[in-house]
Length: 136
Image (tube, rainbow, N blue to C red; front, side, top):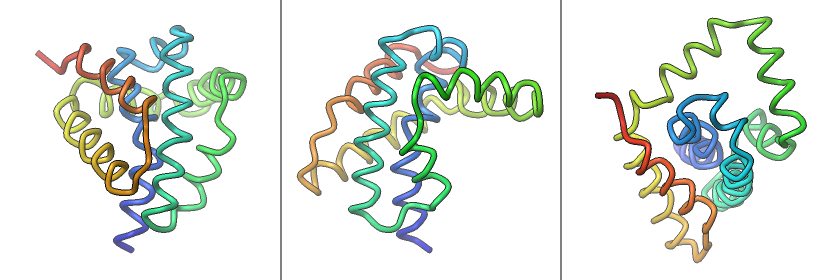
């Protein structure tokens, strides 16, 4: 169970951190450069996650098939079917967890260095997170 949690958290991290980096889900979707960085970081961290242990199947499939063409309609569908879930994700993973995003991002980058895996997109995403800040 421990390696599943670590591997899955590492694989999924760029998605949750991007909500803080973009100032919300719409901010991520509207910024093509940030969105491309997030998707590249997802590929990096999914590969790292598989080195660390077994990534939960739902997370691996989500990270494997995520694309700009799937995200926008997926978010629109989620807003239609479960708007409270989207609001929760934005409130929970946005600036409220800024400090946690910084700590987790650094820990994941360190795990990547330990595994001799470069993660330039995750480093770039972390710059966005750092510049965004947390709740006042």
